[in-house]
Length: 70
Image (cartoon, rainbow, N blue to C red):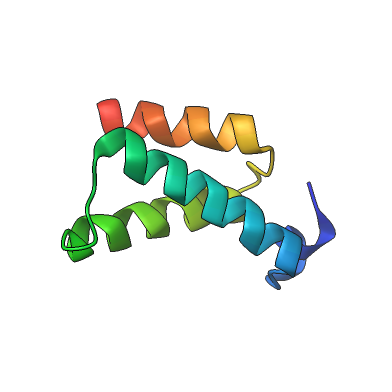
């Protein structure tokens, strides 16, 4: 787990990872820019999972994909 995840500070590499995951999941879910509430909910889920220790990009994608499918 990256140190930044433990102390609550997101560094540029964390933000880049979160952005990649967000973009990929938006594409998979076909969430358009106009789907603001759904996109915000997705972003919150991703950040929450990251802060709870899922810091690997593949694992983060997998974890969030499973939550959205349920």
